[in-house]
Length: 476
Image (tube, rainbow, N blue to C red):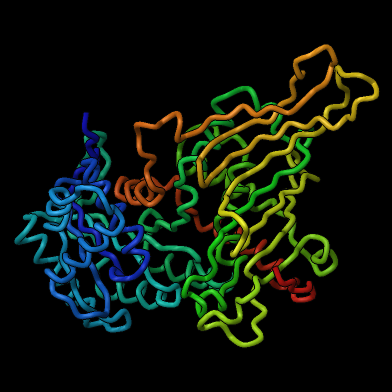
């Protein structure tokens, strides 16, 4: 049985920076997969907006090349032709107000001549964060964010507007707390909260989503989910690659801003949050915010024991990196959630580029057993560990202790695991960007960070950044 999108109002998807790496590797394949699964509105149009000069046909050829590269070896010709029929292109400069007028003309033309109706508009900012303020202002000034349809009365009696407009913004949302607050004030003046979707695609990863299902749909662990039974939590994100041609950008950002302020802290929030009681976006976002808001700040007095920063050998030889750069490419930060549930439990956040392996996982270490049914002389070190493996080889596993076969009472660790690959071998796990785009079209903000979450995460991150210059930068 085919999937069918429940929200089938005509929709036009505009990608700012449509010829960039993010669009080529992630957004275009994600939209294509949704199209193949019949999970996009039937009247769907894609518009690429970038500074390079291209015709509609040249942009369609670019999209085809991108998809063929991602799906090398697969026969996607027919599906690709159908998808490309929806693609259009408009050249423009992000700083040029006239470019937005030309974009508006294309949108009107598509609505009036192609679709024959007022379509929803979704604007995706696949651009450097340095362009956010400019694009926000020009979108608002041009009127592109104003719904093109009128109001209608729903069966419930509520009023709804046809032709909604929504804004998808990539992380990092600001470079520091002050810039983030400035962007938020600007957004609040120009857009309504329900129009804004701040992306942290890690929240949309299948295993990350399963944290809440695992916790709150099974009675096995939630009663133990506190400082009384948990010794520590380790959240790690390791990459084998370096900066991969992004030297100038990365040198201005660093690992803590790049993955700590967003990915790692969002995973922490899901582990530390209280039961939201209902699967509703406002409740879940509030619970995440409360967990992040309870983080103990890092101070000058304890930064040397709570933070470590490093830089991989050869980073300063990367193109675009400043001579003598002190930008970190790895870090280790110990966070504490100062509330009744977690007080005193360390949450150890680690990330590194050029690591020996690619791995993102969460390890929850339960306290050692107080006693053991084993010989008195046996070493007493029995500890249960729960692991959420985010990537690669998505899985959830538990380390437990069992008696070894034989006459002696000797215990050994065993692993009970659930593998996504083995359990769903006939099903393809959706890419996180597929879920992000699908939920945005549906208007579901559950997997998107709220203003309050972003601010709480930045406050903690800044407490580290403002104090760790005194911490030695080690060569990894």
